[in-house]
Each structure stands twice: as C-alpha cells, then as structure tokens.
Length: 150
Length: 448
Image (cartoon, rainbow over all chains, first blue to last red; front, side):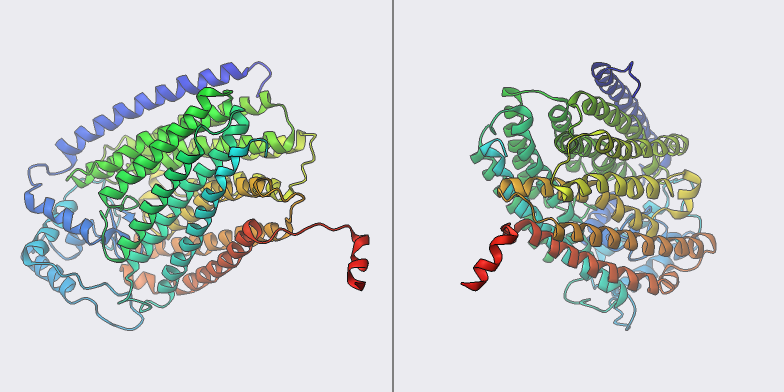
C-alpha cells in the first residue's frame, strides 16, 4: 500500500502474476497426471471390474458417509485402506468374503450404533466393488494413513 | 436504489434464503444422527442428509452471488440490467434444477461424487442457466462503466464457469479423478470465489465508508492478486495423499500457508476503510456484516485452514473432524456472511424501507456468528481427540467415535442456535416493514 504503487500497476501485477501461477499449476498438474498413470497407480490392473466397482461406489453414494483417501464425509470409516485392514494383503480370499459378508449383513440394527443401509448388490457388483477397493489400496499415496485404523 | 432493474435481485435473495433454511434443516437432521445414530436410519440414511446439506449450500450461495451481482451491476456500470426478463428465466431454470436434484437425492438419483452429485442433466441445466446469467451481466457491463469492482467480480464469475467444466470429467482412475475434482472444488472456494468475495466487500466499503474509489480499487487488485498467487499452487495441499508426486508436500505447505495472507489483508482492508472513511452510513447492520465477514473468514478459512495445512501435520489430521470444523467456519465466514451482508445492505433499499429496522438483524448476526464459532470449537476438539486416538495410537474408527459423543451433543446445540438466528434474519429481511412514527404522535393515536 505504498504511495508508489498505482492502481494500474496493481492491476497488471494481478493479471500477470495470476497467469504465471496458473501456467505453473497447469504444468505441475499435467506432470502429476502422467505420474499417476505411469507410477503411483496400477494402470494395467485397472480392469473393467475395477471400473464397474467405481461406478457401484458412486451409484450408492458411499462417499457421503465414508471417506476414501481422506475425502468424503467423516461419518463412517476410511475405505482406501479397508483391504489392508481386512487382511487382504495376506489372505485375499478371506478379506473378500469378510467384506462381502459385512456389507450383506447391514443394517445391524444395533441400538446406539451408526447404521449402514442395506445395498442390494448383485454378486458381480459386489465383486467389482471389492476389486475397486483392492485397487485403491494399492495406490502409492505417500504411506497415508499413518495406521491401518484409517 | 438508483436503478429500477436492481430489484431483479429480490427473487434471487428470496430463493437463496429459502434454500438456506432448507440447508439448515438437513444440517440439523444430520447433527441429530451423530447424537442418536438410529434416528431416521431407515427413512433417510445419513448420506442423503449430507448430500442435501452440502448441495443446498452450494446452490444457494451461487443464487446469492447472482442476486448480489444483479444488485451491484447497474450501480457500478451506471446502466440498467441488459434484460430483467432473462434474469427471471435464468433463475427459474437454476431453481428448478436445484429442486429437481434435491428431490432426486431423496430417491437415490445422483452421480455420487462428493459435491458434484447432481445428475448429468441437472449439471447441464445449471450450466445453461449460469451462461445466461453471465451473458446478461456481461452485456450490462460491456454497455456501461467498467470499474475494478465489476471487472474483478465478472472475472471471478467467468472463471468459476470455466473450472466448473471439470465437473463433467470423471476418469475411471480414482487418483486422476481426484486430481481434477479439486480443479472445481479448490479452485472455486480457495481461488476464484475469493475474487467474488473481495469485489463484493469492496463494493460495500465504497458505499458505506465513503473512502475514495481509487484507494479501494487498488487494495482490491492487491488482495485478489494475493488470493490467486497463493491459491492456485495452494491446491497442492489436497494433493499430498492421493497418489500425486511428493513435491506437492513442500509446494502445498508453503503456498497454502500463504493463502492466509489475502484473508488477513481483507480484515485490515475492511477495518482500515471504515476507520479512514468519513461517511457515517445509517445502515449499521450492514456495516457489522461487512466487518464480520472478513474477520470470520480470516479465522475460519485462514487460521483454521493453516492449523492442518502443513503436510507433516496433515498426515495425521487429514479427513478427521478437524476438516469438518474448518469447512463449517470457512464457508460461513467467507461466503454465507458475505451474501447476508450484501442482503442486509440491499434489502432495505430494494424495499424502500429506510430507515432500517436493524436490531433484529444484528441479533441474528451475533447469535449465528457465535453459534457457528462454538460449533467450530466443538468439532475442533473432537478432531484433536480423534487425531490422537486414531492416527497416533491407531485405535479403531468406531471406538474413537464413541469417545466423541459430548462434542457431537454440543454441536447439535449450536445447530439449534443457528436455526433461531436464521429465522430472525429471514424475518428481518422479508418481514413487515416497521414504520417510524415520531414519538409525539403516539399519544394522540392512543386516545382515539
């Protein structure tokens, strides 16, 4: 706010600076996109089933109770690492059965406990959803979250 | 009100307030579920309440911005609105799309990405309505006087439309999906919406403080410059843990810390202008909002954002109740208070009800603002406890949540207070106009 700064100068700095930072941000985003597709995510493992699983995830709006990679509602557990939490790294078949069994058993109806609704998923959809969660667990996300608890 | 077409703003404000009231209702329902988990569990699951709560906020803020723009533009451009008819059509489309989305959510019709849940055809309708709005206001601007206020405002509104287009892109790779999802979500609220905020504040300050336009407009350019210089790369604080490269940790930490500066500048801006200004504007309530908005935005968006923005802290706090605390106060301070402030300034003029009945409005200001602050404090404490138990000690999520009941009960209490304040405010905007009668004439009336 020094006397030396005129309105025209302030305006030019705003337009020029914003353009500079926008271009820089765009370049870094493009690099991040490339990095995600080639390094941090399993592009080859992104099967049709994983894709369908993401669709099932969206169709049932899981995001407005759960979080995934820390984003979403904070009303129900984090699910980006649910595969790890259910022991999927050591025993994939067991984790798959446990996850499907848990979802099929909802709602628990337990008084005083948050209720997850029953979602009417076909076997194919359930498999796809779990494939999606397994695929998400494999993303190299700088070792977040700090604990398997999510 | 110097220009007849400024009254176009009125139905926008009315629709915005109706949706605001609904937003609070869904917020209350969701807060009740936190306290009594079985509440409405079969009738309306939590995700439906939450999507309704957040979407109503976004829709009413956008309609509010439109109302503010229609009110401001004729005065700034010294030109009547290009087409009032088009404005009403555009509002009808937007309101219909919003209502259709809301009703659809109750039946599970949505696209299922957070905040962008609107079905495709609703997104298209929103886009059409918004483009008509941009056309209508831009035409007014092109024909009239160009000031820093209306240029920065229109730039913010246009850029919001540009970044909105990323809402239509949904790649199957979740990490890439998140990368561009933030191009809408972050670049709106921590980027171009700040242009809208700063220019509307600047407008209120010119009108109410009487400070020279040149001074205010120079400040405006400096502030919006600081917003975008920090806010664009500040997006990096959302890229820490989604599979993006690790360089976002230093970049995001540094630039999102700098995001506090424009908010602080807005506080200084508002207080300095009122201190410096010679005009003693009679609308004290509007003055209160014009000072309160940057102040609470500084704490909610600035301080509460900074609290968990550094990557080595965010590693532990990401996606806890701390995020919810920050989100509530940031949106309230920066955008809710902004629109309520412009309405407090504009409504008496639109209704030609000077001098103003301001006491109720000011009560509304204090009750709502203190309740929102207290809500933020309760969620902050909940977030700190959650971070320690879950992220440091590694305790199970549901066990941790059962430790937070007290905070959730208090949060519900603050929600009730916000509801009361909202009723007071809406009544002060739209309720009967009190006539000011000279004191000496009263006894006469009583004896008749």
